[in-house]
Length: 175
Image 1 (cartoon, rainbow, N blue to C red):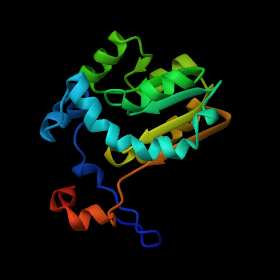
Image 2: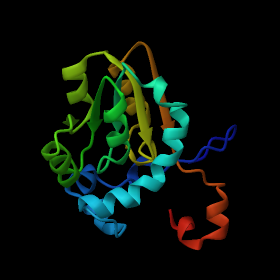
Image 3: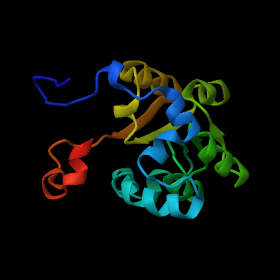
Image 4: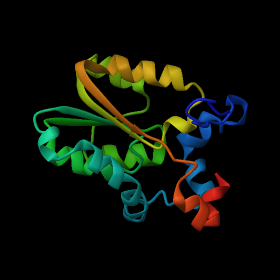
């Protein structure tokens, strides 16, 4: 589907991967991505560069409660947890979540579980390359809104179909 005004594209719900693929780690296996900690961190570090820039500096997360929705293996979460007052992650992929919990991170399987624990108390929510995978983006954004406090902010990113990499590297065009 494509918006006629802004040209944002998304998959029709019926073409989305079932949630069980994300929960089990099957999605990562399909993309030939690692479920092991160190290798997965290296793979995911590259994706997080934009989010770190978008924060605008460490001073913008100091003394704040920050959430990474779709935190993967915790690449961004590890940066946030060292600077924020408190950090939490939302990650449905069980192998990633177990690994992060074992390292002491505060991880939830879904946004509703995070809301149950934090209410509307989060200052900043980051979500990188997740919204294009969810079956109901409007519900996804509504749930994030419930997690944020009154002055909270959401920074969200999604792949750009007009990205130069789509033209230079054929493998990027496959998604």
